[in-house]
Amino acid sequence: MSHVSDEPYAEVIGDPIVQSKSPAIHGFWLTELGMDGRYDRCHVTADGLERYLSLRRADPAWRGCNVTMPHKQDVLPLLDAVEPIARRIGAVNTIVRGADSTLTGTNTDAAGFMEPLGSARFETVTVIGAGGAARAVLAALADAGTGWISLQNRSLDKAQALLAEFDVPGRAYGLGEQVPAADLLVNTSALGMTGQPPLPHLLDDVADGAVVYDIVTSPLDTVLLCEARERGFATVDGLAMLIGQADQAFARFFGTHPPRGEDQRLRERILSGQGG
Image (tube, rainbow, N blue to C red; front, side, top):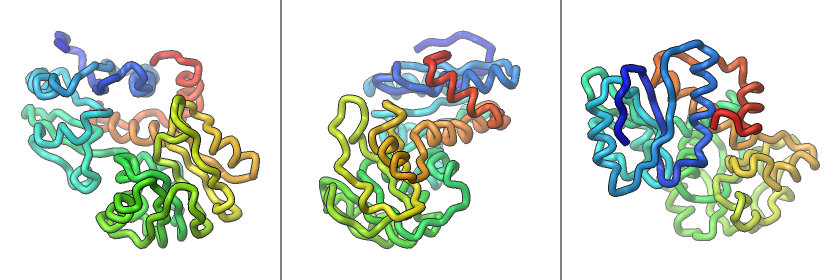
């Protein structure tokens, strides 16, 4: 956890952390820009979180970190300031160190989720899952003026409470229950992820011309996305959201925007397993 260097650096923390694709993304951008700096991964346990932040706070070379599970909520009371979007979502995924050694938490997941959707406004959306990722997605959809959200989850009470918290028009449904035809279907759950149970069949409740979006990154081509493409729906994979949220964090860490014209090369690098 110690670090001695004058080179500016940022990193991603979590437990576990070896699976993170963030070093590949940020490292690619730093190389493309020819910038001095680096982006690492650091394994931080729950017991070591407070000590980690104390050490990094004192390191002027440290620009900040991205935060993955299980620390997104636990870091909140350890920070000097938390930006409104992170307060609203209830989780921090990015910490930035100020020149005065203060630590500010924010959340780039909502912006990252919306980036591949552009300025599109969806009248009817189906969201699968009611966990931490769903909170960021609901915040983004609420801000985008979504007309109706069908939130499918095992626990109806949890789903309905989430809709009420984010003040979005909608209704909670059980997994696989018939819902209004959606212009956008989003899977925020772990269902369909490597080692997890599959999603129930969902595409019969998707309108013609709809977008199907799966934030799962392992595998990147989930069964849901493969079936959606076979049926002619536009699709968005989890790497699009990951790159979108990383863009926001990179600018905060290194003071410049990444070279997004190279997204295809970045994707190829990540999929080949290089740099990660």
